[in-house]
Length: 149
Ligand code: FES
Image 1 (cartoon, rainbow, N blue to C red):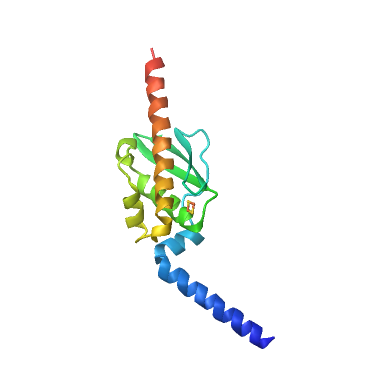
Image 2: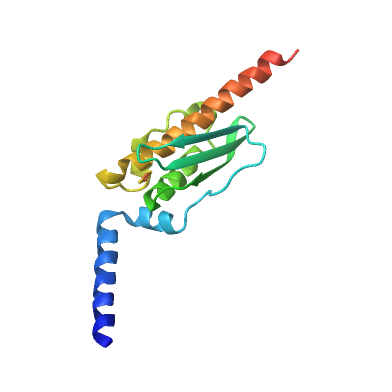
């Protein structure tokens, strides 16, 4: 029994070691404790996007005084996607929607101190979800302008 425990502990520390070498500390932290998770009621911008792996991300945000005051995300994706959703929402917060359009996957990767090549598409999913929410905001704020007397 002791031997089984020893092998289990060795495997566990090998896996933990691998996690730490493949992912940056920031990715690991945000995968376990993601930021800005949730869904905003009556959002100004909202979206659903699907990544090349089939995972999805939903983003919603509220604009106040011309700036993105609150922004939240949900995902059914992997730990790296949780980190990317945290990063993209942190990067968008406080920016104008126009400034947020200039957030690219490389900004997300830089914020996270890198991502393994096999998970770069998670940053693309997060940025696509943000861009779709911004597009929704633009279309709907233009609609409101056009309909006003
Ligand atoms: Fe699918 Fe990360 S988005 S593995």
